[in-house]
Amino acid sequence: MDNIVIVLVRPEESRNVGAVCRAMANNAVHDLRIVGKREDFDDERVRVLAIHAAYIWENARFFDSVTEATADCTVSAGTTRRRGKRRKGKLFLPEEFAANAARVTDGAGKAAVVFGNERTGLTDGELLECSCGVTIPSSDEFASLNLSHAVQVVCYELFRAANTGLTGYTPITLSRLDQTVGVITESLGQMGFFHRVTDADMASFWRQLLSRASMSEGEAQYIEKTFHKAAGLFVGKGREAEG
Image 1 (cartoon, rainbow, N blue to C red):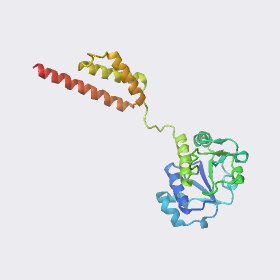
Image 2: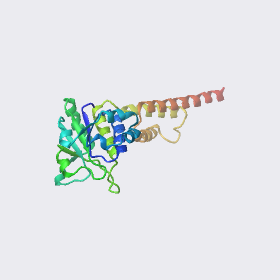
Image 3: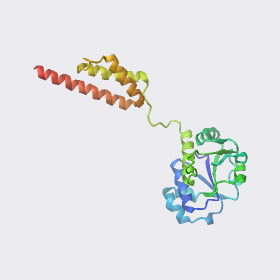
Image 4: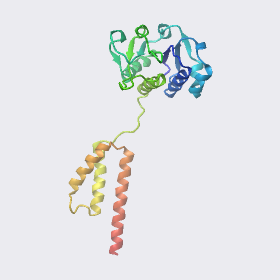
């Protein structure tokens, strides 16, 4: 992630710069470059929203143009929601650009993402200074994203592309699910549940239901323990009654 560069072009609001710093830090991106002058921004207002990411603002570098800010980069992507001949034609989605950037940064090259002014975005000329374009799909009801939100979306995709080992949870396979279904039907059988319905019908029902849930291994084990315990309690109560 040290080879990812965020470029802000003529941002107007100091607090937005601070919020961008925080979004960058959330995703382990640290290289902030700004087309503009440091004295144009209110240091205190930047720090209010940057919070613990103020170090990114402190280390930010300032340039006179997009070309200068991205001169040491292998690829530079200008962000835009508008399409057209002068707007790069084909625009990448954030995840598509992230996949390409991962190949660049793996080879020690730098990949820059360029964000325009909050009100007007990148001009046609500024976008032409970039090597490609990126767009974030959004509703026609309100298509324009807040600057820091746009940075967060793109940085997140870059972070995920660079950290492919990160997972939330892995859904179990159908063969593993069949083990859970087997425990359920066996437990129900021990409780005498199949007087009016066959165990095959019940197994089919549970398999279809649980496959749609995309359960994790932990969830499958919890269900198995629940049915095992229920069957054990039922059988135990039956023996007590017989005694």
